[in-house]
Amino acid sequence: MPPSLLVLHYAEIALKGENRGWFEGRLKDNLQDALRAAGAPGSVRRERGRIVVALADPSPAALEAACGAVSRTPGVAWFAAAEEAPRDIGAIEALVVARARASAGSFAVDTRRADKTFPLTSMEVNRRVGAAVVAATGRPVDLGSPAETLGIEIAADRAFVLGPRRAGPGGLPVGSSGRVVALLSGGIDSPVAAWRMMRRGCRVLAVHFFNGAAGGEGVLEKLDLLGEALARWQGRLNLRVVPFEAIQRAIVAAVPADHRMIVYRRTMLRLADRIRESENARALVTGDSVGQVASQTLENLACAYAAVPGPVLAPLSGAEKEEIIADARRVGTFEASCLPHQDCCSFLISPHPATKARLREVEEMEAAVAWGTLLEEALAAAPLRSYPAGG
Ligand code: ATP
Ligand code: MG
Image (cartoon, rainbow, N blue to C red; front, side, top):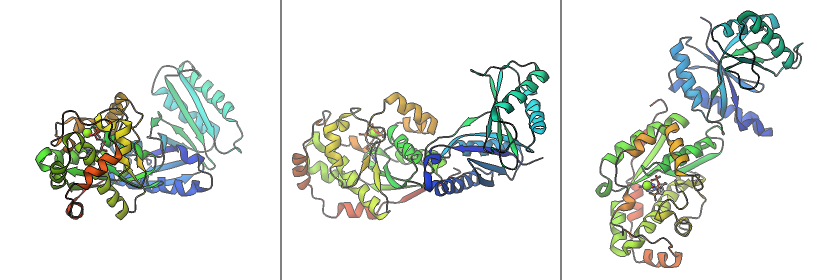
C-alpha cells in the first residue's frame, strides 16, 4: 500500500510576512507531536503554500486517527486525504475519474496551481478533467453547490488529488503567541475561554482554586476530564490546583457576605498572577462573559481585574451562552462541565451579591482580612496535575 497522505492548508499564518517560516515551523512541530500522540506518526513536510503529511502506517485506522489529530491542531484551516499523481494532465485525469466513479451526484473540479509553469491554467485543468468525469460517469457538473468537490493541487514536482475537505480549528499554532495562565473553574465557560486562546496561538497553563469543603472530590474528577479534553488541542496541559479553603475562611471572617464573591475573585486573580510571573507567562485568561452572573457586571469585572497589573483576557466577554455551549461541545468539554459540582465561589456568599462593587470599599474590606502568609502557603501547596496529549 502507498503511504496515506494528507494535504493541509494553514489559516492566518499565510499573512505573517517575514515570520512565516517560523510560524510554519511551529505548526510543523505541533503536527508531528499531535500525530505521534494520536498513534499515527508520519513525516510532515513544508512545501510552498501547503503542508504534506505522509503517514508511516498506511492503514485506514491510522488515517482516521491522523485526521482527528490534524482537525484539532490550531493553525490548520482545512485539510484532505490525498493521492499523489505525476505532474501530468493525463495521469491526474485518470486519478480524478477513478475517484469520481466511487460516488454519485453533482460535482465540481477545483484546481490550485502553486506551480505556474504547469502547461495548463487552473481553469483549463478544471474544464478538461470535468469533461472527462462527465464522459466517464454521467455525473452532472454544479459549480454553485456541488455534492462533491474534486480537488486537484499541482505542486512543483507532483500533483495531488484530494478527498473531501475537512475543517481544522483555524487560528495560529499553539506556542506562536506565548504563554497564558487560564483560570479553570469547572463550569462551561472557562474551558472554552482557554481553548479560544489556544486557537490564538497561546500555550495554556490552567489553574483551579479548590475548596474541599465547598466542592468536594468530585471537582477533581471533573477537572481531570476537562484537562484531558483540552490537552487534545494543544498537546500536554498542566493544571495547578491551589488550595483555597483556608483563604476563603479568612475572607469570610472579615468581609460582609455580599462582597465575598468579588474578594474571592480578586484573590484568585492575584494568586494566578503570581503563577503567571513564575511561569513567565504574559496574561491571565478567564471565562467571564459580561452580564452573565453577578460577578460579571462591568463594575465587578473592572473591580476584579484591578487586583492585578497584567492583562486579563476574557475571550468570551462578548459571547452569547449559546455560542459558548456550541464551542464547548466542539471542544469536548460540555458534558464534563455539566456534571454537578459546587463552585467555591458560592462558598458562604450572600444570595444577593453586590453587583456594583466600588474598588475603594473593596480594598478597605480586603485590608481587614488576616492574610498572614496564607497566599504563599497556598501557592507552595498547589499540586500539579498533568494531562498528556493523547489522553
Ligand atoms: P464558568 O462557567 O467558567 O465557571 P461562570 O460564568 O460560572 O464561569 P464565575 O463562576 O463567576 O462565572 O467565574 C468567572 C470566571 O472566574 C470563570 O470563568 C473562571 O475563569 C474563574 N473562576 C471562577 N471560579 C474559579 C475557580 N474555582 N478556579 C479557577 N477559576 C475560577
Ligand atoms: Mg462558574
